Image (tube, rainbow, N blue to C red):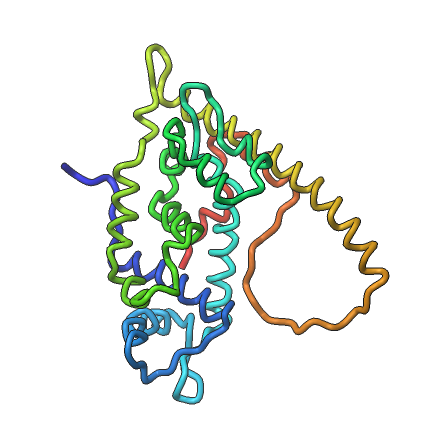
Length: 271
């Protein structure tokens, strides 16, 4: 049977390259040109990054990121922030009742309890379906979910090999191909288009509600932090040039009430 989704060698290099750029910039770390042991598996990625001018060689001995590479990572991190703030909400939807697991998000302070709640069999993962309906690349969405879940870890032995050639890429493609597709969501007299659009709109409304609650909590915390800061010594902090998550005001998410809306961030060429 023909597989709907696949990931080419070039696409693996793109995603692996971005992942490695994040490591080099935010760790930060520089890799020696003369690579040894497991790090030698990173050489094809670094050579590819160098061909795109995202890294360069300093003093003929180390690979370091360039400003162009930093800009690429910045664009990715903006999209990754969007993924965490927008698409993750569709990871657990009860199609029978129309409920979203994230509606109860603030009821769970314990991470393990929240994870257990998400594992309930009534939840359907509709992230691929939503991405596909919006004509986005589900492979990138699943790649981001793997990063969020720590499945592209840098602690396991052999992660350098897995980054480009490991079976993790087969896992990503399999998830995309085996996921519930939006065309499968229709029932009786209700079209699949109506179902997925309703899911997207309900999810957007919940996103706005959750971000408003988070904003209210943040204001409360900042109020107490500022009171404490008035009585504390102020010491200068070392500035580290990193590329971090974007934070948006609540009204940023209003556009997502339109099921066809796609942020301009996703229309940019990633790399």
